[in-house]
Length: 119
Length: 407
Image (cartoon, rainbow over all chains, first blue to last red; front, side):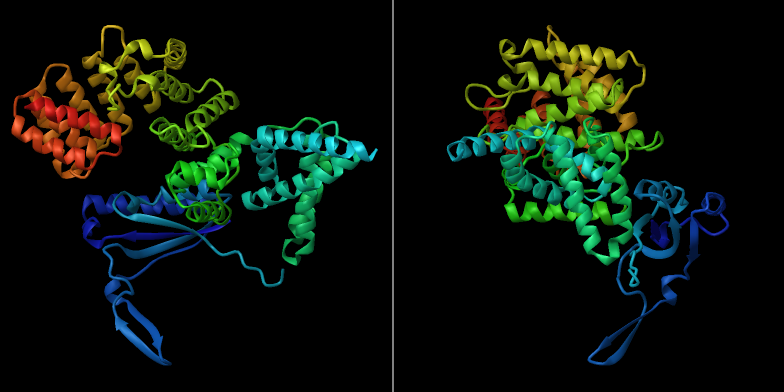
């Protein structure tokens, strides 16, 4: 099964760039990447630019409305994601727990929809 | 021949009823293991039971009614998959399974442990775990579960379907977890079963099904299916020691009583002996865990000479290593105070104000300790808050008697 691991965190809680904690976190992400690749489960994964770069769009009465900023005002922002292919939720949870930002943020685990129109 | 039709129909219906009552969990777990879908498994088992009524009535009872029901239920699932284009591959897999199962028919493997682990997955809300386990493994009806938790039947029905849908969609496996997931997954199972037990323990006794008995059945079942596990033994020990006090838990006036103030002649000696033997067996395995520690605390509460508070305080300290929560700290503080150091206990309790001011037992504990140090006015205020938030009539009566004793 394929799962997306959505990486949420509060930027205020992130370790400062260049600090020893930051170095440790980078090492943790690198190790998580390596482990997912080595186990052959990693399908894709990217980090996102900060929410100050976000543009939100919706169509109201046929008119495109844009908004400067993220869709939802929450303290935890989506910062990146991985897509992994593993046997079950327990396995997905094992990989999610490798993501270092889980110690100060949240990893949301969502199965990808398995939709095959060809039947 | 016509004359025999009615008694025969009754006899067949009785056999079916017995099988579905005593073996439903076992049959369902087998179907789920193959189908990986609880809802589908429940539906085809129900259809198989309906077929059984007419088939058994006509052709007589099969040598193994359970195996018959399983085979027919699997065929019904197969028919459904074949009827749907999207599930062609599933149908092939299942066809193989049906053939294989028919070859080895008489022996039905027990898959209930896998089903229990799926129903009690920590990715499900605790209340949903409880409901799903009672429904699938114990065979309670949705109506019975709703009554036990004072919920509307429709609400409980929705909760059950949401949980089943999540198991299927989120890829919760029907497997006994691997060693690295075992402690966390087992803890989720034991916590679920224990909540079933405590819900039954404080119930009025007018419920259609005794949840304490269901919890005991589940705990003994996993102890049998996964023997020699010290945490399962510890959880069963805690259940036995608590169950032993059931008759003594409220006094003649209907107020709940802490173990130290209970009438010991009402305690069940057999259960105490079994609980202590289980705890000793668990601890001999030298692998400590939260349920073993909680069982040891229950045991220390029930010693012949009264509770051993210094030991209880130490045990809560050990429990904190596994569950570093303010609730554990609160219990440790109460034990410290009971062991003689009231000032220190109260100090710790006051320090938890930010975290626990919405937690009723914090107000009750704080009231008791304030009373102990002679601060009657503050104690009365704390009792009032504890009474206002008391979870039940018995607890309320107990606290009111304490408040009255302050004056």
